[in-house]
Length: 455
Length: 171
Image (cartoon, rainbow over all chains, first blue to last red; front, side, top):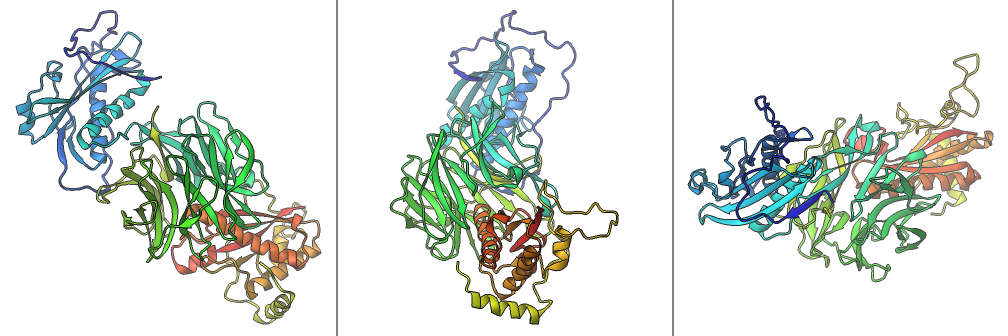
């Protein structure tokens, strides 16, 4: 496992054993690379808690795999500040806007300084090299008024995983302050888009929940659509137009190979994992009639779950794996239905007027997210699994395809603009609907699919 | 869906009378699917139309495509006339196989639009089959909203994107 939580001693060891110390750079420190400051598109709530996040300290400037502990200390603080800001609940003062701290301050913050910056909380931490060619990152959260320690966590990381330590620290802070489950240390599969509207190049791609560690997976020669990470992140199920057919493939992330979910002459699409990763839902069109099927990831005969003459498509398992929410136009227009996992007890739950599509069950089980179409707009909304309490979270020409954060408090989706130059980009909104942000991606993006907290 | 012969007969007459109608083919063709033979001739006369090619098909049918209403997939009288002209050409070129591409406009969700495009392509295929074209000569593929022919975001463009296009793929 690339990232390990460790217990931090109450008193920090401020010295680094000589054997562990790599050759410190004798030259002056180069300019510290900072996180790219994207132009912020979106809205944020006004009453956010101010949290100071100065650069993490280091007991000695050492270098591993080209990463200097002092630079890393600043980069980690940058990632933490960006995570906290994106959550919509906090107004972080990142390392670019507050002074650096000494190693001694990590366990003995100068609370008055941070109070003077109107920070209710302050994050402190350190970075040092360890004996296994990696780093130890310490993460602390304090209440500046009470002068009390709220979080103390340590992580051992390999150099390539430093961002995960930052996300873990941000998750610990977010969970402690909000009482919610963590969600930053997670990944997203999506479709990277480029090229003209009439002939878009669509590539399967993956990234961290904040857009970091971006990686293209397919080369764009075949259209790729609607990816979903397996619960263990080892596989991605998606639709490829390889050889001019519409088929569902399971891609092995580490092996770089892929296999068909099922052999069929018919178009198969809209794949989804079961919560235990052992089953896949997919839709199959036979003679123009689309129904939903379930199949084991090991193969075998698909089980047909719907048999209405209309279009039954998509689907999303409840977190306990017992129910499925899906869309159907059997009533004459797209609406949302639930059924048992064996296909029994199919019942419509959307009655708010307009068309409803792309239902996704929250990992908490309490809500269904959907796309609602009507009045010239496509909007993201939520309702209970019984169909009550509908709330619309976004308001745009075309917002589509919600996907839940691991803690069920934030939703990513894609937003398409109209016209000949219309583009799709990935956005996220929290359940208040107030905190709305665009996610930075190297190209345009669509079909985001948010995975669980990383194992 | 079922198509009655009488409707087809009426449509055949309609074809003769309406001629160039409001749903004529757009000037531009959609990009050919990767790896397909577009039927470009290799004869000595570069302008010669190779019999049985896509070029030959386009030149001798009312249109290579039919259009649908919003969220609809029924084949109306005008569509029937177009498909009848395609059927006649296919009967004259019995070795030719075609792919029927189903498409949707951008104002639908992705997965649903794939299903809708499948419905439309199959509606065209079923009608051609009812006219005597062997179904084994016809593949269908849905592109959903992925390959619009018209790029605008207005009713006129969407009407042209809700389509089923017959593409010659060779013999």
